[in-house]
Image 1 (cartoon, helix red, strand yellow):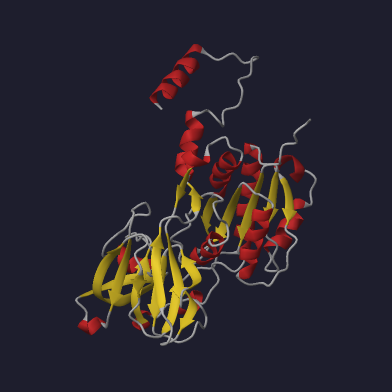
Image 2 (image 1 turned 135 degrees about the horizontal axis):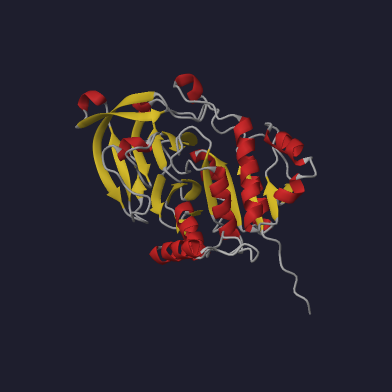
Length: 364
């Protein structure tokens, strides 16, 4: 009996709204143009084809990305340099749930990896629906802490090497931490970077940029060169992505605080922050919030409203989404000669070339 091999398929989620929120009005954040997102996808497709990926599933949208890509796909020459490209058949709401719906469809179609173009908010939504599928995280948002700034060509190569199994998932990926939030014992969401408690009573325009209403910030990791609310923790007590703990920062009025600092909570927006205390949090350790009512912002976006008669808890989970480690994958590709073309017998190698390659291989 002949066993048919399944096509190697990769999904791409490109949020047309990422990098276009209210922080362009209240701060000096730049706009990430649709044209560049499309160019990134084209570079990804070329790299995926090179590594042997046969099919790519794309999230449809009405924001302009899908239409531009359809025009780019029209020339017949694209068939030689791109994998088969398919836009998912799904309803489009032109909102955040499009990303969730697309991921669910990709999981059903058994993709081998998902590439995400977006900010922290987009990656949070994908992380909540992708299970253990490896993610390639690419930054196209406002406050980009979880996703990396990467050249799409290299990101595509690394994703393709993982998707096709040329680099083992166990060797080329890492597990990330998340914060999980419950209200009255019901799961309400997760954060891949930070969860912040605000005294504001409505979600409003989502993006949070007024620190005077904040009472607590919980972070999975905090880097001193980050931007966004996690920067507050990163400038006081940095926590690495791989550390087996997170951090809670209790805030207070600047005039009464034990410690004050200026933190870059959005591009071009440095805010005065009053800090009352800093505490490490361990995996599974239930954290109760001090605010009696207000809003919980997940990765900088106000998402969950709660009232005084509700109990809110959150905790750190070290079994979050899996992401592709680009540097590790590309180093393994060099070690195993995965991107070297076969030598041409009509062009014999010179002795000096052979010696230099042998030496370089031994050193690596």
